[in-house]
Length: 477
Image (cartoon, rainbow, N blue to C red; front, side):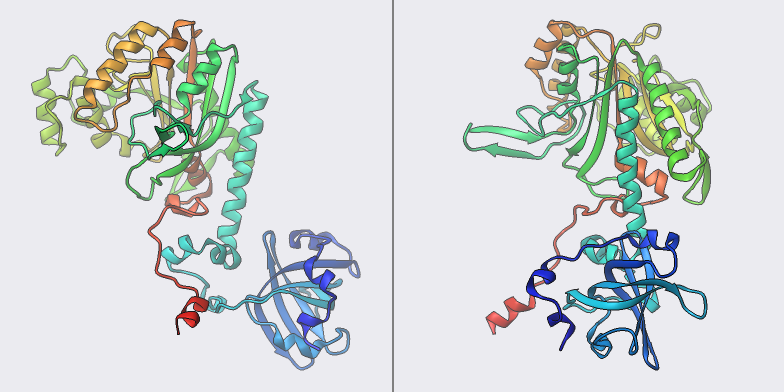
């Protein structure tokens, strides 16, 4: 009788584990267990078969013997990659290796595809790993651990924010006007309402409407979508957390951000000093603060501000190999210089503060530096981790900023559009507020050591491959 036929039909539909594999080491010898997982290694020795069974928490050796395991001969029908259930007892081999000694087997799922050779290192092609995440997770313990860590980071972030008095909310993903960031949206059409809509590029404007309504501290963790290129740091669909607090300014958001990252580093690594891309980075608080124009000045070896003449700024851009449009004002040119010359050199962590008004249409003007805003970006390992600012809450100024964005939209398809409803909300009164958006994917990259965003998104955006199920081929023949 084959293994697939040994259980009744009802039993084949259900298999209940008593333990995860990572819990087995704490059990006493002789403890009965039921576990399930993939067979990824196997060897025969006389009247014994040794297999390594993997689940999401770890792996364990399973021993089947002719003397103790009914239908032991049928174990030969188990292939690498099969998903099996085992009843047995805890013990150890003569060599002292923790093992489950099988008393019964159940074949829960038969593999019809060849599994990678685990002796040769398993799955290694990056494209296959990203396309067939199910196979990557089944064969790559490091990948499984990385995604389990991602889940912990998201969960701990929610708990941290709630402990700080923030209320988690949900805002629309389908929006009639995309706003809250400068980015090209994905657009679609709603048939019933006969209207054009966009997938959100940020939840910002809706969250600030909730602050107007009286929700003093709100946050949202969710998907946002930007119709942009794909790289090691960019995926068109990604996860962001945005948080808004009434009564705060951008300094309050700096303290929240650095405290959150420090908290997560301690929880994941037990220390605030971690390794990333072969270098050490200390995430402990407080983080360094630097103004954008001071960093550009340092990189160029001469003072540069938004008061520097357009001719000089353009000349500096040309010397740095930066393409620019004649419509760029001093603030935009300063930003281009910063991103080209300074940002990647910041190992950090550092908060880069005081972005020009010209490139910060939703941020409040700095209280002491005219032409700059109370805005910061958190930079770690040469990459932007977050963006935040004291929120502009003057409806007339916000309206004028939107008008400027509409004009910029004639040459920039990432410019924001006029949002009259948001202006109306501001007219009811937005209290002093600060907001922050942090890329959760980049945060996970940092805390897991991943250097490509594809390694921490379960199903990254890719061109489809040309796989055709063999059953379709059989039908065609």
